[in-house]
Image 1 (cartoon, rainbow, N blue to C red):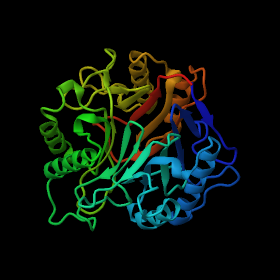
Image 2: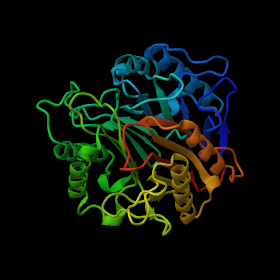
Image 3: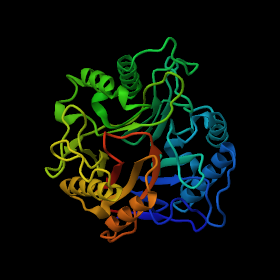
Image 4: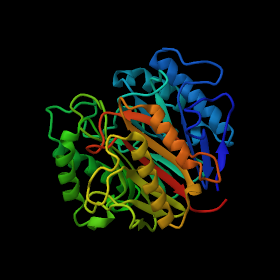
Length: 390
């Protein structure tokens, strides 16, 4: 069971997600600029970012936490040109020195609902055992001020890409080379904590087109060879978005863990050896890869039916949690990726109906619109479950 975060003034996607959950040593909170007392107008991205940070702070205070407790921050922007003013807001809120800045990843997605120009997804921690670190010789991706934050046995990495210190890739390089370079950089970052790629327990890969998927997969498998067996690849979400910056074909965020890891796979859900595992348990946490409506024969189930795909996808999440010894009540957070242009009400109805079977309220989480997912898929959902007890 987890503690719910709630502030009456906040208004993130009501009816779909709780404002936040606290479980174990972590709190999961997503926010945008909306407040309960007024509709969101077409304010500029900087103003929305400031209000979003204020909303994050308000939500965290209900859990006796504050902004400086945030260790991981995903920032979703429908217009990547807004990255400049949003980064200025982050610098003002968290500082520029990297000693109090969460591991940060900026992503240019396809859209957000409700006139939102920014949405932030935060993980905060109550543990005092944390360290922020930066490698002077390694460039930081845009929006990052540190390469990683260690919180207890977890290491949260900022987004990593193949760009130079000025944020450019010149001359342009192929996706295979970018993928290999990114994984090398991740290994170097982890090495400062006496860890390596072997210690990865979750990855997120953002690319601007499915055209890059074959080359990315080929390079990733080549790097992972000799590190992971085919069925031990870290749980992954491969998301196709709008923009990461000129000539940047891939940005990866990752989580590593110092300690034992256990791959958890349900026989009721298709496996993808050599690509990603369904989930990994580390301590009391189950980190679940992005799930979709693809069946055992690699066929898309409920093709063209967003509500049907949503239900199937959530059923896959449930099967994986149950294989790990938990129940649907143990899911504390989801991230929902919807292909742009879908009828959001169809998704929302199916999502709410599925979670009616929980004894507790809805998980924390958020939705973002993306350009593409796996061919034929309209929705992808990843999740975090807490299998300990408060």
